[in-house]
Image (cartoon, rainbow, N blue to C red; front, side):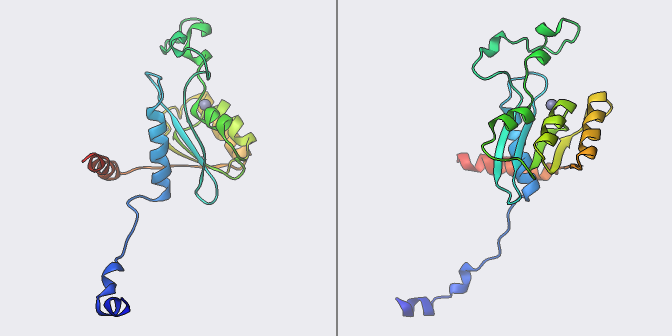
Length: 182
Ligand SMILES: [Zn+2]
């Protein structure tokens, strides 16, 4: 047996390898997948929180109160009607859901979220002493809630940065998913 190993070219197994995606892309793709689970017909948001060792602590997406019949919720986004007939009165944001399901401390956590947090979630995130926010979209950047959120992060010394995922990464990931089906 020993002789066989010596005689074969064992070097053939020492090939160079690398991951298809980096940690930022890996966790943002998870946040994107979480958002895909949301039933909200207009805005789907996903969030993943990880510790300093890149281990996932928790994840969440925007949805309603656990245990209630979600078909009773007014899912439309018309703000003209009274708040009790708006989804905004009932929906829990992805960050708040992730926080409420976390099994461990969020101190020092990195937060991957598909949409820049609102001021309500910023308050919660800052109170849990997260370290960094990595977001995909900041489409509400000109709103008051957004400005307050940024102010809260600055006061709490929580850094934030936008992540761009190249279309080629999504394409190769999609091709990979398809390959799993064959
Ligand atoms: Zn929020």
